[in-house]
Structures are given as structure tokens and as C-alpha cells.
Length: 239
Image 1 (cartoon, one colour):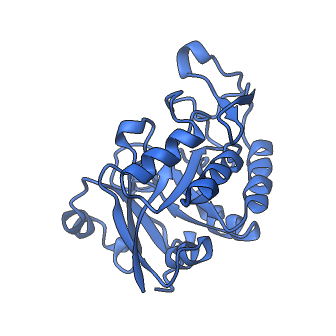
Image 2 (spheres, one colour):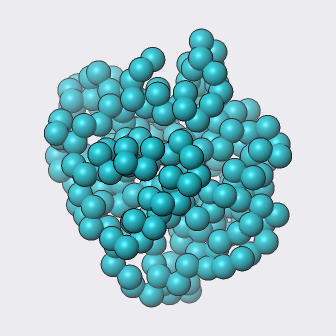
Image 3 (cartoon, rainbow, N blue to C red):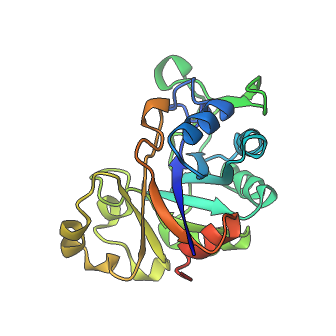
């Protein structure tokens, strides 16, 4: 087993709350500067900047995982990661069909920019991505699995937009094998309050919306190899 620095929860400029400087190439370069070796692109309710980020990552030797931060019907955020770009984009289409379509107001919420691998804008999402989908927490693990993906609840120690904040606890019937806490979380104290975290693989990620917070002090993950499948296996608790 080898140790790899990771950040599995990062937003690009496609997320309306993501800074416009969060372009695919800027994300990759900042991650490399911080010592990060594995990065997941996880925009709100979309995967459509993953192709550009993966292209930039491949050029520069950074493993980029296609992903999404899904907002469930309970207003809980869940990180979804996929083995293939095709699976991620298929899941993207499913989510888009199962979320309310409310026109974005860029002057209030921010732009939602779709870029190519050279950081050139090729489109913009007109409907607001900061909405709750029609997908419930207890559907996410099974649903992502149908698209070759895995899922874990995001920033569970936060008092808003987390599974615990929304439901009071991580429900065992949801089938999660991992969970994410913020980088500054006192995990021992938090686990005493929420014993359901015992036995789950715990990740710490930046949830970056700005370059200066991306993988500032990356955490490490023990894997047999640096690959997307190895990361997904770790989420499933296989090592």
C-alpha cells in the first residue's frame, strides 16, 4: 500500500458559488502545487466540467476523478464519484431530469460556466444548480452504483446541508460505507455524538470554492495504486 495526498470534494466555476478562477487548469495546477495527487471535481448537481478537468489532469500527471455534489430532496449534500466519465455524464443527465428547473440569476448566485480542456468557455448552464433534487438520501448509494459510482455524505459535521443536519443521524438503511468531515473537525468528539460514524471510512476534504483553499493541507489515503478504481474501493471500505 502507498499513501497518496487527496482532495475528493472540489468545485469548479460551473458551481454558481464557485469562483470564476476555478477553471480546470487552475484547479489542476493549484492541486499539484499543494502536493495533491488525487483530485475529484464535484460541482453542485452536475458533472459537466469533469471532461475538461480530467483532460487537464492527464496532461499534468494528476489523477482527476469525475464526480458531483448531489443535493438530495432533504437538502443534504452527498459526494458522488464515478469510475468512468461516461458513467458520470449519464448520472448527470439523470439528475438534471430529476431536479427543478429554476432560471439562474448570475448577478445573485454567480455564473455557471462550462469550459473545455484549454479553459475556454463553451457554454453556461441557464438553470440554477443550487437546488434540491428529487432524489432522496436512501436512494443515492443504489442509484450511483447503477452508473458505476459510489457515494458518501458530505461535511456531516456542518449544521446545514449535511445528512446529519437534515435527518439527525446517518440512517443505516442508506447503505453508506464512508462519510466526509471538514478538515477542522474534531473527529473523536464528533464520533461520540454520532456513534453511527464508527466503522465508516472517514474522509477530510476542502470543499473548495476558491483556489486559495484547495488542498491547502491535503490528507493522505492508503491505496494499492493510484487509480480511480482504487479510490472507489476505499470508499466502499475494501481497505
